[in-house]
Image (cartoon, one colour):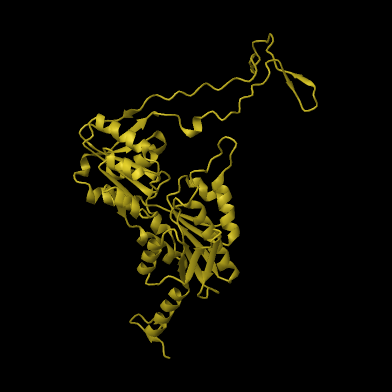
Length: 395
């Protein structure tokens, strides 16, 4: 076949060759999913012009997970769409077994698309527990996953737990667009941080929308991290007993010269002062304004309801809650329906159709186009930087 030349004299392949290359680039993609969010998997596949691969995941009578892949995956790029829901343990086992099944079936690469990563809130050492998200990362790497696509991790440092690449996508452009297009008179709004820990995210939203910022400070009840964990065994005031049973005298200050720069205490190991949090207070003006609370996850909603009541008492005319992940556990829909919150906006990283039937205030933003674009760029070995334009550490 003769090569064609354009007006500048450069050689370009004929149209048939280019179409063959395009077909080859998509024929190597196989999208499969577990039972956590099949609707999202179907939407992603539809946007990419593909159909879901033949994979069935079911549970036997003894609750063991069985995975059957009917299509060939040898030498192909597999994308497993499996998010975290309230049934997190089954979601994880399904993902691990699907990944290992693809690995043993000679798949070329196995990418886990996990919009909401389960156990991401257990990413810090507390009491006598462990960092569960670190354990989960090791399990995923061992199962055969070669890449992770997720969205709005609870702590961005979780990416360091994995020995494989992790792309942490952001849902903030979708939420910002919703504020601008769907909240009437949003210029009269103020972005509210439910607690100081969310202040950086709220400040990022406020700066992008050119709006004011308010922060709710204090707690109505003790946080889990503040609870007494039982490890109360004060050292003796005069001596320590080492492993060999001998006595080691504590360092008691003696008369020292004025030139000595090292000081010591005479009462042993000093105690930590008790942390006393003030009652809920608002730093910022919300009187006559639209209050928009932002967060990464809505699960137990008691704190959101209490914050909304305080905002209402301080003169807020309407109250919105925006978050990436809407887990909405327990009786969250009922509490939200009875609260003073006017609207709750979440993305479809987690299925919540049942919760929407129980609460008419819940609105959903579709982010399947972002996941589809991330899969396309990874498969075509294109840069992911376009999806992270203007993203800062606070987002």
